[in-house]
Amino acid sequence: MSKLKITALSDDKPVKVMTELPASVHRDLVAYAEALARETGQAIDPIKLVAPMLARFMAADRGFTKSKRVYRSAGDG
Image 1 (cartoon, rainbow, N blue to C red):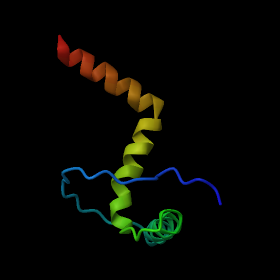
Image 2 (cartoon, helix red, strand yellow; image 1 turned 45 degrees about the vertical axis):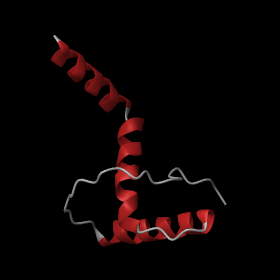
Image 3 (cartoon, rainbow, N blue to C red; image 1 turned 90 degrees about the horizontal axis):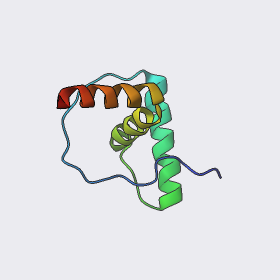
């Protein structure tokens, strides 16, 4: 089996966000949670995967990372 990109969920203070997901995305989220549960031996609530997946996506987006650095440095002056 291939290594999953999300391996651990941090225990951080949550912020409530309400959104709607397409059914296909929800099915994939449930399938990912099941795969992660098989790898870790712990049941995972699929909803708890959304934040680390978004964080990983944004961290991997070079354009976003660059613009975030530029935005933060502009606020320093």
